[in-house]
Every structure is written in C-alpha cells, then in structure tokens.
Image 1 (cartoon, rainbow, N blue to C red):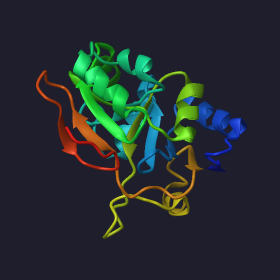
Image 2 (image 1 turned 180 degrees about the horizontal axis):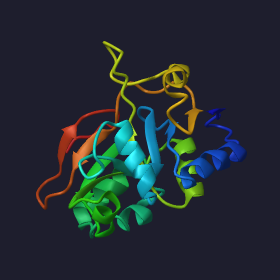
Image 3 (image 1 turned 120 degrees about the horizontal axis):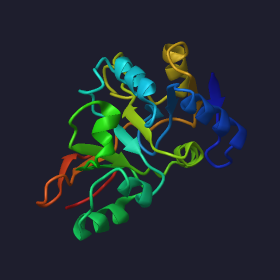
Amino acid sequence: MFFEINPANIDPRLINEATNILKGGGIIIFPTDSVYAIGCDLTNKKALQQLAKFKGEKLNKVHFSIICRDITELSSHTKHLNKPTFKLIKQCLPGPYTFILKASANIPKLFGSNKKEIGVRITDNTITQALVETLGNPIASASLHDEDEPILDYFTDPYHIFEKYENQVGCIIDGGMGEIEPSTIIDCYSEERPRIIRLGAGKISL
C-alpha cells in the first residue's frame, strides 16, 4: 500500500491504517525529520525479526533506534538520565538527533541480546509523531539506505521507494521529498562528556 499524507494536514484514517499494519506485525516505510526510515512495532518480536532480516542482520546483532513519543516514553526505555544528559536531550528533542543511552532492562529482552545501550529519537516530523502517538509505544527503526545510488546514501523520492519496496513492506508513506542527511548521533552512554559520533541534519556544538 502507498499512502500519501500531507504533514501539514494529516488524515487520521491513513495514520490508523498504518498503525494497524504495525500492530499486526507489519513493517512500514515512513518519513522522519531527517531521511526516510523503515520500522516496526518495538513490542512485536516477530516484526523485529522481520525488520532485522530486511537489514540482512540477526536480531541480536542489529542496531535499531527507537522512536519515542516524548521524553517520558524515552525514559521508560533507558536507565536514569543524569542532569547534563537530560538537559541536552530536552534542548535537542524533538529534532533530527539520535542519542545513544544506557538501555533499560526490557531492551535486551526485546532484542534477544545483552544490549546495554540503545539509540533513541523523538522526531519533529508530524507524520512520525502521529504514528507513535496512535501506536501507543515506540517504533523500532533504521534509516532506509539507497544502495543503488552512487552519490546520495539515502532515498529522497517516495515514488522510487515504492518502486523498489512495494512488495516487501506493509505500506509506504509518502510524506513529501526526504532529506539527504541522516540524524546527528550523540553518544551519551558513558558518564563522560557526550560526543558526536555522526554529524548529520541536527546541528550542534558540544
């Protein structure tokens, strides 16, 4: 399925259809405030396994980010945030940033691994916000790479995404042209000063 959703005037019926696919264990492709992403319901183990298979990885080895509704939901999937980290997160989110944080005890159970860290996001994209809000829990996600593009690393045209993946996912959401830069990744896992692992769409100076 291919849903065209105007981020400035979201059709709740299409959001409901997309989240029903997620709740049913399906995988969807959707826009974020950086590049297009592919994701599934974080709480659905079979969907996580399917998403890992799509990425060509085993579930206990793959590195997904989780997209949360807000800082409260983010905090329920991470260990206690110290004041400097909380302040930085509140300053940056929602926005095109991924924070590497200490994972709570439920994360290793979900991924069948001994993961001690997790990448977390709260995006500023209204479509993604509506998906997470309607789903009621985070979306496990990964950036959608375009391996056939020699210059750009990521898809920007949703119609090209549809042409390639229409038979591999539950639905593709067209939210307009995608960005060419992924999120900025900030590592706050250690107790030392946060460090930028990848500088992307989110501009920051630490």
